[in-house]
Image 1 (cartoon, rainbow, N blue to C red):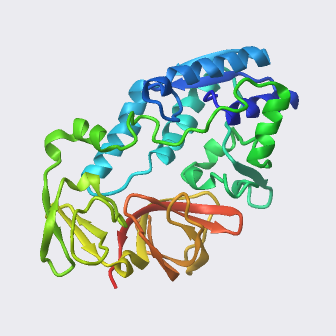
Image 2: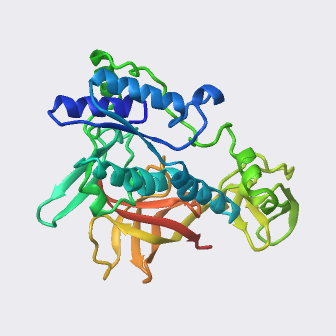
Length: 353
């Protein structure tokens, strides 16, 4: 329970269905929303909101202390990815390593059979294949299957997603009619452990001397300007380049070895081929022949038709039918067959045309 309307309503739904429900939340040492003014989760006031909802539902409540795990698995990863010129997705790692990792383990130690969350996704068991299938949530605007792609079968078999069959408006209505005190609580928006709207100050404090200014280059290697440090730039970025060249320029690449930011015109931000590695397959795949599917290259991406070809060594080449904007190393590429998540991996390299 995060203290928000989704996880609170999920707890109510399960209790209403006859489950023996235990409320629990993670304390990861993040700044409180009352201190930062932003809509973040997992602060101390959120823990208190979760505690009050548990009291209202008359269920036991626990707080699991995972500050050290969060620092090691999420914050260190976040900083390292930006330092190396990639754009991280900490929510995916938090789901894999903490919510369905350390948290699930602790829940099992309490005697729980499942961990239920407020994610908008669905789980089905495929009797023929003997495996769990992860599917998109009914509410397409809120679907969170993308950030769950890295979960394994041993995690999914102990997981429940009570909200997957509902629209967000239905969830708020249920919470209101049930009298849950958090029915109108704003959703968390920013990265939970970043106090400010921008992550630049956070990275500056964490990385310090690892951030150095360097050249902004065009694709031919001509110096066009100077950047403040590659952790502050990401593929597709236009603002903050401070270049007056008479036409809009975008970040099209980051060269860590040269400490350089590469820029070009908007058309150069598009690509149609990339390599994904560190793959996780939720639905078992035979990679003997290319696989046709849809791929999402970031959370809010609508998905694009693609063909997957194995490269061996837990990597594959993704060929897009239509070029897509800002394919970004460090982000997840998640593969879909209709509503079902086949699996996914991490974007390693975009192939230059």
